[in-house]
Length: 218
Image (cartoon, rainbow, N blue to C red; front, top):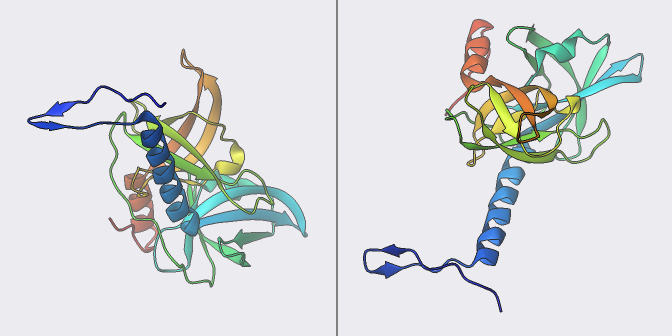
């Protein structure tokens, strides 16, 4: 027999919460967020004379065929960049804007986005999701859930994230963009949880505006 939590009382209404059902609903919500973000996710592979140099993450942020990612990825020695999309297609993309500070880049392809991430503000303590490419040949991205720390551009995550996640999106619980992954640090502090540094969505917007590129929408 499953145990139920004591019913909270709101006026004359009693609400019974089954812990197992609550966990199931949370899993379903997480899956919905992942599915929404995954449609916009782009795996980037950097090549030099056809040889893999490294990989990173990116995402669609507009109806235009532009992909947002991390600027430090462009510092790698490479002669081409391949973008791999959620529907299994791929193409060569070109760099149209890049910066090391802020750590942002935009690549352009030919494929029209089937969907794109909209932006939102985020507060300290808010639950967020980070999505990234777990490997250069991974067919699906991976998701990690965490919460925003006191610094608005730092995210505390509860699962592994490595350099392949650089350029990936961080979203709120409604799959709205709040930041772009700069990089991850090992377990840190008394919680022992990794720290993922982000470029905030507002900084992304400023970067896009400065480079005369399509802007984020809310």
